[in-house]
Image 1 (spheres, each protein chain N blue to C red):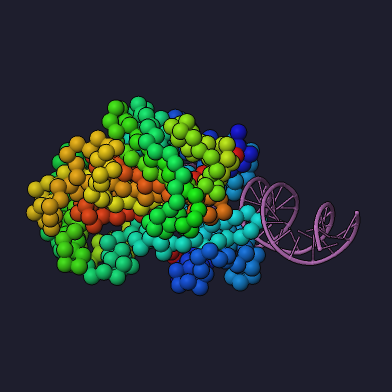
Image 2 (cartoon, rainbow over the protein chains, first blue to last red):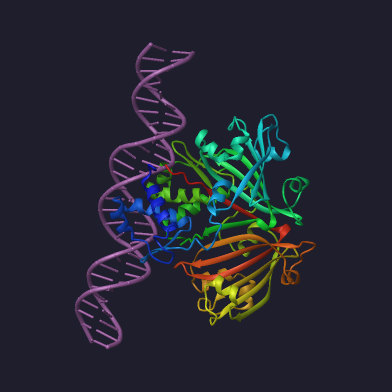
Length: 240
Length: 240
DNA sequence: TTTATAAACTTGTATATACAAGTTTATTTA
DNA sequence: TAAATAAACTTGTATATACAAGTTTATAAA
């Protein structure tokens, strides 16, 4: 599967947690036991365990062991990068993506700032509506630098752009910065979404970067108020 | 300061990034150079750098080096655990905390679920309003298990509960799970906050855990729509 | 000069060892 | 029996070595 030893161990342990083989509140085997099970060194095991800890799956306690945390309490089980398609699949809800616009544009002032491009560069603009169980809930406006993404099609945008970017174009998406706030809904929101009586939308600005720290995508995701949820896991660093 | 070598190196590098000694887009010294500067081993340097990477301060690129990322683009520079006091200080805004309620209660059904306690246990209930530049913006409702926090006072709640818990009670706050959504505002919201014409509030549910993975605090933070902002940094894991 | 090759860098992974420090269990002592 | 001590566990930190793999720079060959 994965060539990385510690990543494949991370995966193996993660799937055992998700399948309930390791249950919340119980301890997973000690580092030394895992060393024997996976026939590897302790440092390699510790890399895998630290990843699990950072992502909120286990809590390591000095002298005692590693306790499985309860991730199930949140039915929206992510912080971190995940595509709409992956998410809908996880939640097991019926969903559909409708491509409303797909064109090449020149950036306006706002977009120049968001994507760090000049006025002459070509930008892919993709406007999509996310329908969940029949209701138009999310309006996604994606902007890609054409230099990085030379080709796009309606078909790709309907399926998963991320899958295309990573598998076909071999782009290595590395990290993203997200910004959340609430805004009065615009004419565009009212046009594309089933807004009911709501006067505001939740806006998620998403700046996505590649492996080499270059910004290549800016996304504005506009959610109907009542359907928006987000979950975050954070550790506190203690100095000393 | 801190006894930990790799944490103190992390801190040192972080402050150099924040002070602009290492500028966004430029490279920090290589691992081997840092080994010499800090007179330590490469693994120790790598621990510090990995922390910086996880928190979005640098991007490591194999074969090239570590690039400083631009954190300043967001003026709300955190994901992760941070107290209201710390945050207000960072933003340099005038702020005030008003303690509206401070009492010991028995948990109702909802609270029993949120704090994982039985009906007979004593719970500290703290209701505070956060005033920013004269406006009542945030309503914080904190609940602590009295077994963990035996004593609280109006004075402590006005200053910083976290400071009291960590410094006085020596509690080790380890991680938190946050949940964001939007809700219609309640009578209580209208009573305590300057809501203007807004009909909804942003609710942040915060479950805070100690070192031993025990849940000890549940907080509901209710923000006025127009003043809410949140920033998140997330890395994508690539298998293979 | 241009191109190809080699060397010298960079970070990434895997392994091994030693000791520190916290927790649990077994043993010894009072 | 009860308490103190010791041993055997647990995770945490620091160091060292070896090699892999990507990038840049210097060198050699065409």
